[in-house]
Image (cartoon, rainbow, N blue to C red; front, side):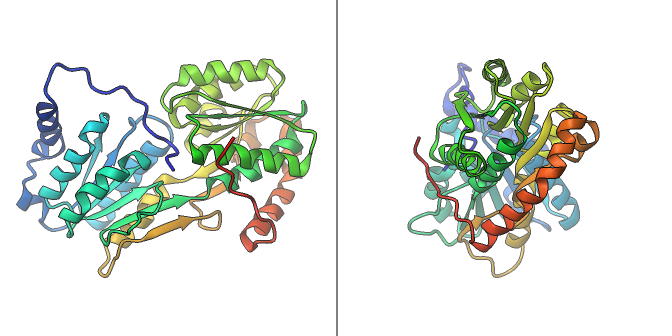
Length: 352
């Protein structure tokens, strides 16, 4: 299911789609002087096609940084291409295949059908789709990667119900999609496990790239008495953190460590989905001989998905909340181990 399905507006330029795609190809390949033969040169070409803009302090920024790091370590040519218009996805993938790309990584569920349409025509190109459902039937040169993020949200719910002073916690997702519904339900289940009387308010911003909307929703929640919000909305999270920063005793559990600096006194924790680490691990594997596409589920025992207490908050957060967080944390670690061993089973509920 798509966690961060792009809701960015499509291009309104008065150009034909063919011209738009030709322009994209120039940006992706021409500016670097890459031809089909050049892309097949030593090191090859590894491309990230991201469907949301960079500058999100989250998934996209972390993936670009990871690919740059791996490119430096392994010596391949890399390209990061922002595919803003869904109508261009398939053509961008074909352009990369024609250029002889060794590996193409793309993001979120909206690219599934374009990959299915393109990958069989380019068997020498390895496609990796991050945050994806398994393909039925499987395609030998495609890996799909899924994440059990809802398990981290369960742990966040446990933590929230114990640290909240008001007994009211919130959740703000980008869109009501099956995977995000599961995250909200996981948060509710964790909260109820620790305190059946806890009140959980869920809302969706309608976008993963609208900080203003995130701030509006979060402000309303905080004003209603909520004192802890779990974010699940990519770039929209920035507005949620801004709302937390506007009042005392307000807390956020965000999605990425880069968000700590946005709210050193308010971002108490993160339900981490480290897209950068996931990309680094999967591209590293795909660079090796013998790689065969498959579906990879990713749980909270992998380092990619986790619930973590902010070290910045522990230094700069309100003293009473910091002390309480430290007291609570062993309980969270125990619950995490119980989930990993199967002693605690968190239901995957995708309906609201």
